[in-house]
Length: 152
Picture (cartoon, helix red, strand yellow):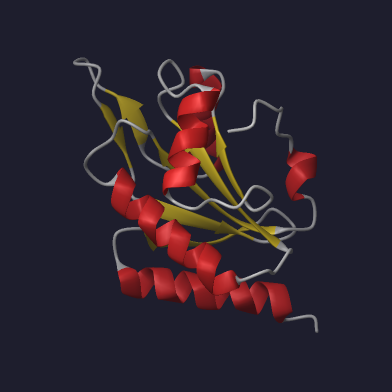
């Protein structure tokens, strides 16, 4: 949402949650983003985590559009990154990197999983959570806290 290149180095040593969305989605994306706002609020000022939201509609989700969406859901600049990029790369990352169902059907309708993916500081997937279910998001928050504070 800032027009800057995001790389793996930006999450080195961090626990993070990844999800896939698009700003014009009026079905599950607003609820998922509201739940991510809850995650951000619950984690407070902790600096050892990030939220990575990948747009599945890079043709329409420009930097200004993502910035506006980020403001709408209260995304903190250094914590929650809403990203766009090459569509094929993002879809491949979703399917192969995060094991998410992401596709665009023959009618150009974007379909994606409502799952959040929790990744530890060593880039190992630690869990999948239904981003539409408050109880599962509570479990995500607890699991994130455990991963962050387990070494203290």
